[in-house]
Image (cartoon, rainbow, N blue to C red; front, side):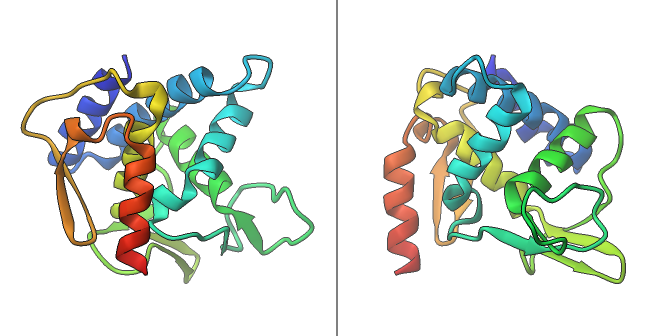
Length: 179
């Protein structure tokens, strides 16, 4: 089931349909998180934990919070300015899954995420980072998608099907690229 959702993400992204891709990606994250974490946890808690635990893969390097005043997310910490990245990502995914367009201006390149002039700007690589986190999760090791799908990370390009369940390998590769 996760493989089908991820294939849909690839298809939607190929057509520039980011909101639809995010909706499918939200389903893939929920399915994966429910298979990884205790079923007694709320679905949002599972998703938030999944995103948090895989932030190094999602971003390529560690980033815990982003200054983003004005977002409609209740901060879980004392600060009213810094919101945990996993909360921002979960809000983007859930908003798209609810059929609404997240208030994001997507860019092909540039900074990962920046809040400026009352708008949130984000790189499309953030979407691909979440895709990579889902695909590399050991829970999904038996999933597959189309043979012609690939992902690139910094300087390497991989066939997507070679990445399923390879979380440790991808973390090592990312570490080598950032050392």
